[in-house]
Length: 399
Image (cartoon, rainbow, N blue to C red; front, side, top):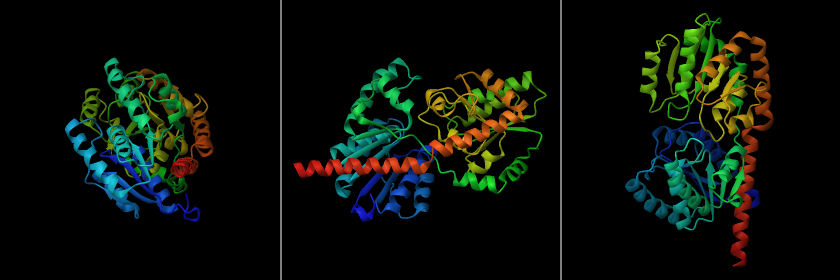
């Protein structure tokens, strides 16, 4: 889709709505930069202020910030947003609309279909219907997912596990699905490792060399398993008080206050630090002795890939997407979901075995470098854009 191939006139809109800047939206922004550098005209529809500033800082990418699409369902707001979105798409005549996250992806696919956008791609980072869904949620969301998936040209599943889930819950016909697994750019992590950021970060946190520093990175929201990590620290404090462990939690969200109360109630204020939003996640990862992700469901966790790329010994829940990346005992340790006792046991195992930490860290880095690079992901996504645009052009010629 390069200028040399005659596609420099391609116009694309990436829709994230009011989603906060995080792992998935960071990948979207890197993808927008990639398209920009190919000569594609790229706009991003976003209303979260942090996201807007990140897009503007990237340069050469347009921002649509006057159409508010909340991440969660809000019927009146959504109806207004859909009308305005259809008008925008008809005026701008985009060749490709690429949607992300919950409500923005649903409205984006509806609007793009109504405006007759040639190619509509949805980035499926996690289905609304999954193993944690209630019966009522499955009854409501399954037909909505199916309709939305029928409206778009292709759904990109970010892991093989997500594609399997679509089949299991009958969320989309297989012909509408393509698997392009997530990948990350490791350059910032490599720079942090080369600069020995570990020592500086630990000094700033007031953590000595004899302390086992445990960390999580991710939003403090439901489904991320943050309570289980806090409870695991409580178990260690009670049953293994001699272990010199300290937990830092990087990220923010609507459960922060509840997490703070849980920490205080467990008497862990001196063992757990909430860092809030952290800009320098790569440097933080290099300072950790153990990384934990206790998520209950996930498409394919960017935080997990980043921890592995940093060579940080990793504990992850054994959900299908995590198990797709981590072979238990080889790249990290897998634990059952909602089992703080298992997390505590895994932390204690790693704390006592420096050689195991070294071996897992090395294997994790190799795993990401081999299979989970951003370059591979973007090359596959560009090829999909090119294939779908070419198919539409052939249809126009035949008609």
